[in-house]
Structure formats: structure tokens, C-alpha cells
Length: 309
Length: 264
Ligand SMILES: Nc1ncnc2c1ncn2[C@@H]1O[C@H](COP(=O)(O)OP(=O)(O)O)[C@@H](O)[C@H]1O
Ligand SMILES: [Mg+2]
Picture (cartoon, rainbow over the protein chains, first blue to last red):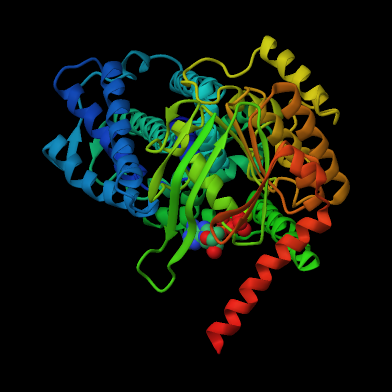
């Protein structure tokens, strides 16, 4: 029982991460690796401010803002600096490792004896954390759903779907890419801040592999819970994060698996999901449609021209 | 409405791949002009449109739309003035988004986008009545993903999206070429209807001579980056597509001679 509740709680925290990764990878179609740096950055900022005596909730606002700045950096490198998207994320992530160390002043910042957002819940029922975290992540989901239905949100979605088209309608896709990455990494920073308060410390290493955790959550969620609408997917990826934590918890129970194998298991989950055709249906469909459009448009033109000549 | 003064464009200048795509073109379109453009493959027709729309910067010359010098504006800044439909039916719409969402994005053409919900009842009603013009029953499929539509339906939707905000200039680049004859005919008919209804100033590239003669009030023929023939409405009316094809062949024939001379 304890394990299930623990997985639920951690899964809900990773839900923020999954929402962020979903926004960058799926909506914006941008393979953003900043996540490995923005997650611990949120943790570092939140932990630092709490140790300085700031309210733990307000420290989370700053964790989100810090994550947003990380996204801004990647976005600027990519759009203004014309650096490849993957590389831009890697550069940000690398730079953030040192920055996070500077923020914390040490590689591990403990919150022992400090108030966190969980302190008022400590003596309530064993489900209180779960309910509280669910409400928080559900609120984030609702805000994201709303954003993706606004004029600006539609422009961000179209940037990932058909960027030439939305540009021809007067949108600067540089701006929408940056905006998408800012929101995405703000969510990830928030996840990091909450995780630091949940486990009672921020660690400079805690971002390693977070991008794969986020991806695993997104893919698992989409496969299990479906992608019928945006509202459904944003719920699905949170569910995916919970299932992911449960799978990891169960795996750790097995005698032949040790905690150090966790990242290997996570990577395997993503690899399996991406290589089994049934799971990556979406990708296959996309490729088919681009191939079709090629043969539909280019081929007839060639034929037409021959006839004329 | 559109004033093009002596523009030129060379791709990959000073390399072995150097290509003079546009060589000093002047063109004035008056309000309500509907100009068809023909020319062999590689004549520079699409490049001319890209220069007008801001996809590429010009090397020299100026472009102004309705008195605004747009030569230095980026593509998305010029979008306020220009509606565009491409040859590829996939190019003009976002496939994972619904019909109403695509229309909403087009409805906001060139406007500042903020945190207002993109759809409401009033807009939906407006979109429905706009879609009725297409006679494809799309008004009853507002929530369908555009990726599920056929090429013809997508192109019709693209046409509506390019025109229903009454842009100052409509650019059509062989927008019926990728469709089967029946659907191409439908889109042509719709184009005629929409352009007429909204008095849109239009530049339309086509490879169909009949279409080029039948539609619009002016005709241009391009060859090797230049406008080599220009017909007024009256001259156009006297022309048969055979005459045009002959004019076309004459140009190609010259090429042929040139090539032989070069070889000799
Ligand atoms: N982006 C580009 N880079 C290099 N060359 C180009 C580019 N676009 C067009 N061209 C060249 O310019 C010439 C004119 O092309 P285009 O305008 O597409 O012709 P058309 O539309 O009349 O068939 C062609 O020789 C083409 O290869
Ligand atoms: Mg062309």
C-alpha cells in the first residue's frame, strides 16, 4: 500500500514534467532536452528560497519562472542563434548544471526542519498528499488546456503542425517556439520545485535522465489513455506518469533489479514504446501522409508537364 | 494595389549553381485586377510570388501593396495584406487541428493574438455560413480534423482561409494542379466565385492555358525570369489556347536554337 501511494504521489509530481514534455515534443514538435537542466533548476531555486525563509508556495512560483528562463535560453539559441534544436537544448542543459550548482552553493541542499507545502498535511490521512498533488496538477492541466484553446495557443499548436502555414497567417514562429519552450520548461521547473520539497532536498544530479522520464510518461499515457482530444491527452500524460512510477516501483521489488538499474529500465520502456509499431502509430501515420502528399502533388505535375511539352 | 518596380533575384550568387530566377520585373496591379500567369517550368513564377509574399528577400527593386512599401517586411509581417494558396493541398492547413480551429487562425490573419478563446458561438456561426459557400457540406463538420479531409476539400478550405478576411492581394500558385480534373474544376469554379464576390486583387499561376484565358482580366507569360508577353482583357478574348501554346513553343524553340549554337 505504501508503495502504491508513494508511486501515486511521485507520479503526480512527474505529471507536471509530463505536461511540459508533451507541450514541447508533441505540440511544438521540438525535441527539447533543456528539461534535464530546468528540472533541477526549479528544485534549486525552490530549495534556496525556502532556506532563505520564503513561503514554500511562492518559492514554487520562482521555480516555474526559473524553468521558463531556461526555456527562453533554448528558444533564443534555436531561433535567433539558428542552432539546431537538439543541440540548443543540450547547450542549455550543460550550462544549467553549473548554474544550478551556483544557485545552491553546494551539490545538495537539504530542507530538513524547513516548512514545505507538505508541512500542513503531515498529520492528516495517508491520502492527503495524493489529493493535494492531484488538485495541483489538475489545475496545471486545466490552465494548459485553456491556453491551447486561445488564439495564441492555436498559433503555438500550428507551429508544430504546419509552421509555413501559420507564418503565412502573420505569426512569427520564432515567437511561438520561444513561448512554447518557456511554458514547457516552466512546468518542468515547477515539477522540480515540488519534487525538492517532497523529498526534502534539492540535488544537482536530480535532473539526469528527466527528459526520458517525461517522454516515457507521455508515451505510456498516450498508449493507455488515448489521444482523442487535447483535454484527453493532458490527462493521459499525467496518468502515464503515474503508471510509469508504478512500473518502476514494481520493478524495484524484483530481486534481480537494483535501484541503479532504474534509468536503464526507463530507457527500455521508451525504446520498446517507440519501436513496437502499434505504439508509435502516430508517427507512422505522419510519415504516410507526407509520402502521400509528395506523390499526390509532385507526380501529377511531372505528368502534366510531359503531356503539355 | 500592387506595385512591383524592377525587382530581381539570383539564387546562389557567385557559385556554379548561380540561377538568375527573376530579371528586372515591373508589374502594376490595379484594385480588382485578376491576373493569370503562365510560363514553362522554372520560368520564375513561384519565385515571383515568393518575393511578393516575403518568402525570399529581393536582391534589388521595391514592392508596395496598397501604398505600403513592404520590401523590407518579413513574410509574417506582410501576411496582413496577402492571402495565399499553394499547389500542395497539405500546405495551407494544419492537419491535426479541426476545421473550425483552422478557420479561426485564418480569421486572425495579421492581427495580434492574445489569450482570448479562439472559438465562440458567434464565430462558429460565421464560419458555418462562410463554409456554405464551398458547397462541400463542411459547415456540418466543424470539429473534424483537417487531416481527415480529401485533397480537394483541404484545398477548398485553404482557399476560404486565404480569402474570407478580404486580403488586399490574393496569390494562387497552381492551386488546382495537384487535384484530379473534377476537383480541380470545382476549385477553379470556387476561385472564380470568391474572387468575384469579394472583388479580390488576384495573381494566379496556372499551367492550364484554357484556364489562363478564361479566368481574369489580364494574362502574363513568363520565361527565364522575365515577363515576355502581356495580354489585356480584349487581347485575351481574341486568343485561343492554341495561339498561346504556339507562343510558348516559339520561346522554347529559341532555347533549342540557343542550345545548339552553344554546343556548336
Ligand atoms: N530556393 C531556391 N534555391 C535555389 N534555386 C531556386 C530556388 N527556388 C527556385 N529556384 C530556381 O529558380 C528558378 C525558377 O523557379 P520557380 O520560380 O519555382 O519556377 P516556376 O514556378 O516558374 O516553375 C528555377 O530554375 C529554380 O530551380
Ligand atoms: Mg512553380
